[in-house]
Length: 490
Image (tube, rainbow, N blue to C red; front, side):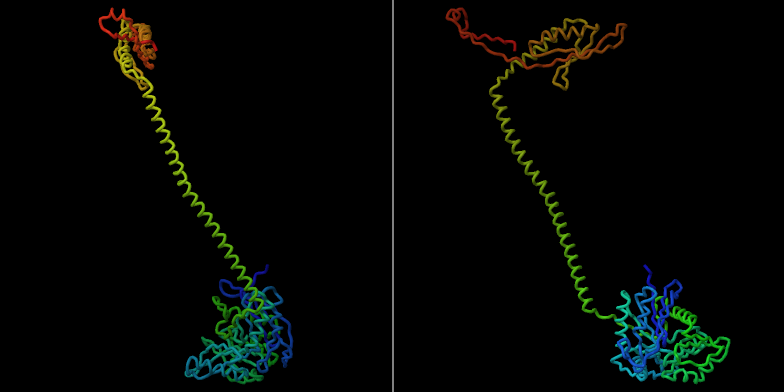
């Protein structure tokens, strides 16, 4: 895909049609390519739609737009320079800022025959004597602008016409004098001046009038800096070897003029410095364009609505997710409350069962007291083992009782545990030797510390048995209603 140039100029100069494409570089604009279009004689009558008349001047729409069909895509912004557009350099009275514009437009209307209502103007102010304003003015018919804009828009899609002007005024070399010969217009650049200073002549005898001017004749005399003569019209005059002659019929002259055109463009804005150019407004949208714009607008609106609908659904999903997150703890709290209620019911049931158990089970406190007495009696019973001494009685973490002591023989602790267990088995205790440690103070390893674990078992319930007494037995007893008690083994 070919890259578009940055600027494209379409030039009509007599029978010559030129296209100059410029590329913006760091130092300014440079010529990308120069193309020459078809040559034809200027018609004297407007007999087709391709020609519009400004007095007796003709802009060839077909020849200009034909340049766009060759050489690849043009720039997006196109300027048209045609020598069939009216150009006037005139001095008017310096009455006021708006008045000199009006006076310059009247001078152009005198040459073109077009009224202000049917044309567009552009003017540049030049240096002049005090009390006067020298204006360089171009005037172009609105019908020509409309036709050019429409034709360029059809041929070069993606490009549009932005400015229209006259090709005269491109300075080849500033210090030198320069005479330009265009169709019914001659332009002279005054040499050795810091600012742009021009003199212009209009009409069929424009070049003859210019050559008859003493200032022009003096400027064209042989000198160290030869003057430039640009010939872009079929009106010829005598060539001189002392002049830099640029004839548009020759390709080197076209290349030199195109380079000067590139140098005249402002590196920032791209406008030709000092040259008056008519700014072309954008074309209004046609029916097809309006229809396409309506379709595009509708498509954009549908897309926006679709995006909005999608975002709404997404927000709704997020809200539902947030709601679910808030509802989950509430449901958990509700379930926990139900569990608490069930546990309370279960607790009440257990309390009732426990109370009933307390009422139904007979707890004999006396049996517990006797079991403790039996414990002490059992420890005392085992004390007949002389080789083992009990030093401490203490509880452990598992609700057992520990007997700690020291033995002088290895088997003494085991014998003590066996004697105690034999005595206490009937009273709800079991005795077990679970730790014996040699102190290694003697040759046989003794003495030995030991720990005997006394594990309680449920105390046997003590029952009371009532014996019926016979009269004889009652007589034998001194106390009536004697009750005997027995504690059976549980």
